[in-house]
Length: 307
Image 1 (cartoon, helix red, strand yellow):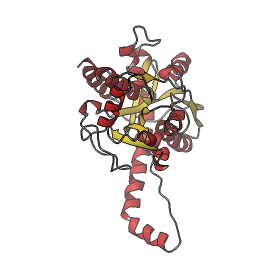
Image 2 (cartoon, rainbow, N blue to C red):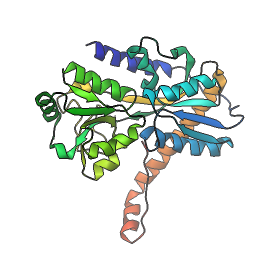
Image 3 (cartoon, rainbow, N blue to C red):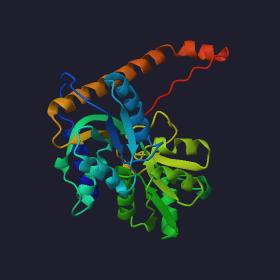
Image 4 (cartoon, helix red, strand yellow):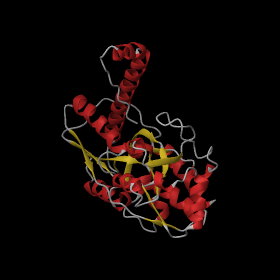
């Protein structure tokens, strides 16, 4: 029950963080902007950050660079960001990367007041995955195997909500599964496919390419609805484990003393870029029959959708 209360508190905190930012005239940036990420290259957060960085560079006329700083359950990236105290050094990632530590550590090396919300950007679909070689097809199968082989299974999870959710579940279910820490969680899907770990909780995007090889199986997604990119995978509620339902939000954050007008200007530009991408996707969807016809005639057009 306590874990469910904390999950609810995290969701409320994310909502409150992004309340009250309005659009103002842009006076920012004056020079290169750094986006500090708690994940390595290839993660869903990294892909999203680089997409925005490219468009912001073109819009602002100043470079926007992505710096991957995985490790320490997100604390490595947070230290770089908080220590900089520079309004051109921003944190890009899930709110849980810093909110969870306020609950699971007695003295986290930062205060919530050190972090100023700028704009909410994305919602990540989390996935619970196992190696195909285990012949585990459902979450019930996994729980039964863990009970039959206490201490024999290894698990890993991405920083923040993924880690908090799966290891809270393991504790609640009184399962003996060993936690394997990763400096860069993007190394875990390959270890999962080779059966070096037997359980992985991370974004669906992070395991998508490995899933396509057939060497891993996603047992469920933690979102309330099935993922559009993997419609055959059940939700946690459908799989019989509603306590694993969680939708994790991510966004952009600045230092505590960042002026309101700068945060508001940045938020407006991020929203404009988001609307432009949405308009482009809608236009592509309206003309998709023409694109399919062109592809059948030997002309292939690809539409990338980054979550």
